[in-house]
Image 1 (spheres, rainbow, N blue to C red):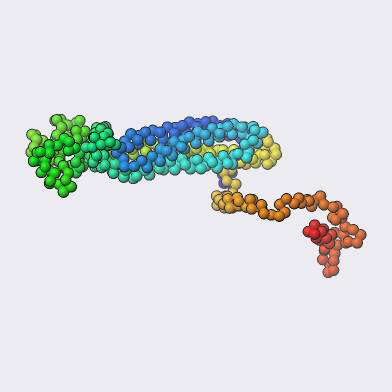
Image 2: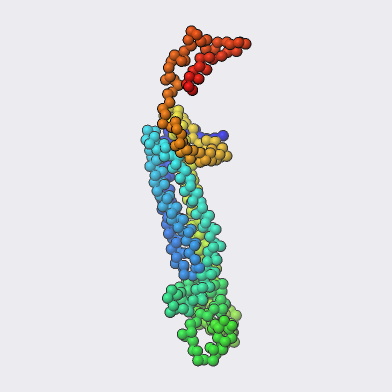
Length: 385
């Protein structure tokens, strides 16, 4: 059963080709947009790559960039094909290219859909990467003189200022890591030594936070030391304590930032996929309609176009058999008769086909009234001999 059968006149075929020519040029622009979205996403991820545990999430922008480049090339070729399809004579040069082009475009369109879905499914991977990356950045915050880590302090400070956040999940996370280097601690002080001895891991842990955690909405000078000790500061009530530091963790703030970007890009890529699917459907109708009018022989007549000539199951079964039989045409190399020229039946000796005086004519009846074709049998045996 034919799927999506539509009848086209000559004028309608020409109009369809012209519209598809225009839509393919629009698709070139959407491909460039896809490329731009991939580049933008890659830049946004690399901007804060120092606070991410791994760079595996870059496969999403890389896929968008590759798909955008392929979109520009495929749709540029599609515009040329559709323009030539307005003339039946020019269509003949593309006849053998149309089906491979449609198959390649179908797989490309599927990749666009996959790219849109990845933008929505990357959230859990990104969150895990930020969770581990931020913890490591906080641990190495003090290592400003260590190669490879000397810029982590600046990166983390800029992150907390720009996203108005503090710590991984909150400002209390700074109480669990030693973020002050020993170079800036008075090791001769008994208070400092007692602080080291009080921790089983030998770390200098205090209820202090970096300056970048200070909220700009605080009505009083920022309190960074003895944050939990209300009695250590004058007029330090609960309201002042809440306004003093950023309450939101940086992981949550960055997840909100990237989720917003991913959802916007995913929605735009999904729209591009729907548009590409529309163009692909139109090209399929144009291809089948042009091929059918060539079979009819009358270029001015109506012709049918369709999406699938048979049902989806039958088409899948047929293509599967074609794939299975692809290599069978190369399995005749060992045939001993491959170079032997055979004589067509219609070019053989005419006397063998004509009845003789001795033989009974064609269709003569044998014993029992049954008709026998003796000359045909003789001819068949002679050829085999």
